[in-house]
Amino acid sequence: DRIRIGSFILANVLFYGLSVVLLVLQANLIWLGAIFAGRCLVIFTIYYQAAGNLKERLSVVLMPVLDAIYYILYIMLSVSVLMFKKIAWKK
Image 1 (cartoon, rainbow, N blue to C red):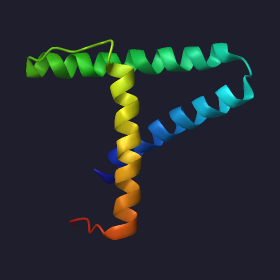
Image 2: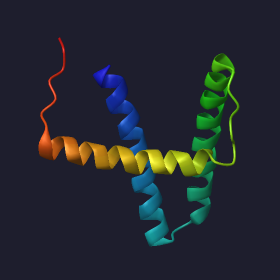
Image 3: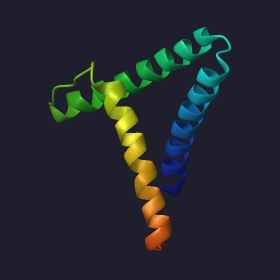
Image 4: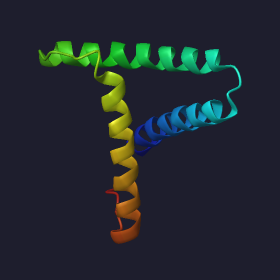
């Protein structure tokens, strides 16, 4: 589970970090658009399958916004956990 969680967070960090770097450098914004579109396609596919299994509706328009908000909240949660509480993994 730690490897799955770690790889998920690493993918998000790399995506958003690379996005910020490409925006700041303004070097070839086509790459940023391609990376964003590819990531959105993968995420939409996974969430669409999950929504179908759960018999829920999926808002395609809100997905990028909710994904960014989720990432920001995850970072805030990580910082608060590191500052205030030690987590012990069950072995």
